[in-house]
Length: 74
Image (cartoon, rainbow, N blue to C red):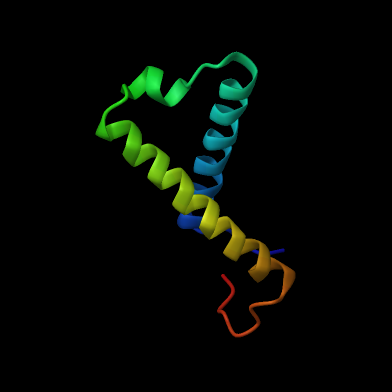
């Protein structure tokens, strides 16, 4: 089983936060990130980090599936 490093865990937490936020938006039309951080630049940074984490998780899926064999595993 692969061990997760700090970046892996951070990406997973951010993707979970993003998924829960989208669930709240879809079900209740409530944006938790905007409610906590406002609609300014701080919320935009959170959204950017969630998006980057999702891209990183795509990489992780391919790495764990063995498609990135030349990538070092941790």
